[in-house]
Image 1 (cartoon, one colour):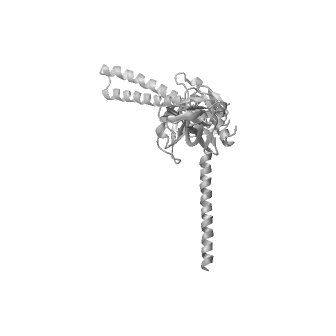
Image 2 (cartoon, rainbow, N blue to C red):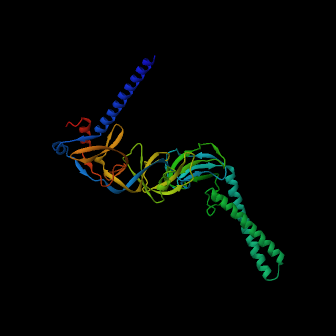
Image 3 (spheres, rainbow, N blue to C red):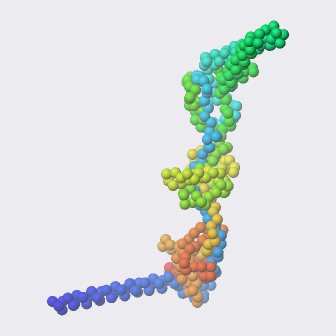
Length: 376
């Protein structure tokens, strides 16, 4: 029994030693594979150039997403202060209108009554004013009492107030009281556009009764569009008012729109993001409200180690540079890539600094040679 146990232990020890040896050989092989030795002729044929990384101020790019919208001040809801029936309208959603253009014609009996009340109040005011002038003259001659003079003055002022209030009501209906007479009292009023813009909503049809609280039309001043972008809380400190951003749509990413940050709402939403409001430098009709938009904001980073973009290669999902260790020997060094700008890319590695010697040109040729085991 004792001999049997010793035999089993010996077999286990032997297997363990072989596993350790195999693992050590694997590590040695991997370590050897990270380096490649080339001949002088291979170096010449590959056209490789060895140089030093540079410390540069890298301009980073912050990606933002959002939508095109119109600020509240440029969205106009057209309604009427008094109800009425729609008698005429030619508008449809999507049409463009100019300021002062006729939007609709409404009809109602109360328009007639309001004009009648104004003209009646105007006549009563004229009568009250004449009586006031007469009593003023009599009072100056002591032919009339002060009390009667004060009563006529009060009556005239009361009629003035009533007439003025009716005039303001008529002004809300776009009725000019200066030209209003008994002969041109109208049962209809015209609704005109207060702005140049796009008709975004139409809530009327001929014959429909519209109450004072109803929306007739919604108009948008398209020249005043803004971009509402979202920035996550970790990126907010990188943005500032007045900063330039470049926007583009998914449909046409090659067409770029220059814009500037106008406001940053630092009250975070449920997604832990802040709204960044950008104004486009030049209006473009292709930027329609609701359009999904992307934007890129340039940000200045601190000095960083950078190499030409040709120096960084990608292999098996990772990024590497080739460090020259002397005698035409090159070693693959894993790096963490950063932002790219003006032909240079930022890299991070504890093994690479400004004094390191790396392959700055045709690194991919060296990678192919490396993958082929050194044959070229």
